[in-house]
Length: 466
Image (cartoon, rainbow, N blue to C red; front, side, top):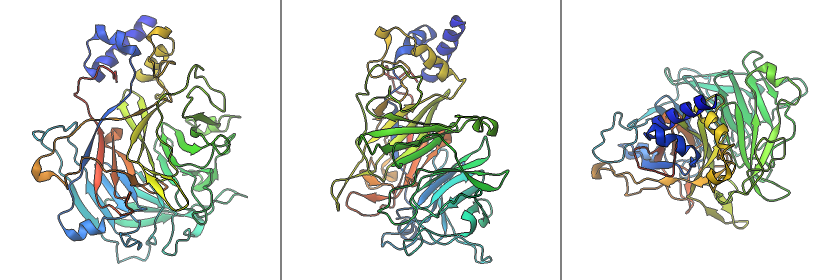
């Protein structure tokens, strides 16, 4: 059994890194981080009108296939953006690192004007939540033009059809004796394998109020919102939120210890499993000690995490990223820290957090082996072996851009606020990239540019095994 496992792991090592099988078996103990990534600025629209229209903040970016859809937010004057939907065709050339690499798809822009033949249209909004469901961009909540949470009948969901440019809505009554209050700065996800929406957090009144820690599911069997009856709660309101592999992740600051914490809630793989006693339990892990949880943990207890990202109070994005074979990460990027009642420090740093591997995959098998390696073989940055719950700053690989395609000479977005829901960034390229658009820079100016962060393979990297 052990020999078979080693053989499979060696095979994964060869596919993932090109390392020969004999060397691959010995490389199992090497750390999976830091990840090598590249940042590429998207070409701007051809017209000044489109560039100006795409300068916005407090909007959402939703990826459907190879297209990124931008909706809502406020413009550079602080006015609500119209309900037109901007579509950006993303470049798809994988691992582009030199001018000689031709793009298979060029960056193209298209504006879908709101239909005028129907009155069934959402109101302009900002700080709303959005996600993709098949061909639909789905939006919920947000603030209206007066800065108030939008009140809509039965907490409806709005669906925009990317093929027909038509809007529709679906009412969302809540379970008996429960109320899903109108909110903004929350997050919405769609679990394709189980066909439900997950809604988490948000604020229900003005910006001074602490965000909610509620989690709701919209079940297509009941066509209603139900609150998740989880045991416990995350250690504080979410600064950033992500969803991957049926698990909801939030980053928060523990109100008691003032320590930054990663919280997670596994929503199980079926309704039957969710209905079992104690099947839904929030767990919290401090950034500085990935071996300590506030609930039952299977992680060995041994040491603290030597590398953690700087504290953020908001404006950060948390986006899933996968290197394949079941290996999962969360990209934690940008954001701000309140330095006083009126001033903020903006961040440009990008970190990744290794989260548990998808069950029954080569990566999870490798983690099982790593957790039982002799201590002298384990990584100094992750003595428990697998690397779960450890942070690392990304290793940015420079990308050569032809002169005619360069945009303003920028190689990095710089410090940026992606708004408190983090909705201005989304996973793309089949889970192996992140696209972001706009936001507010350190000067308080609203940006009108887009960027793609993607995995950068093809580089000799003895420190990374997958």
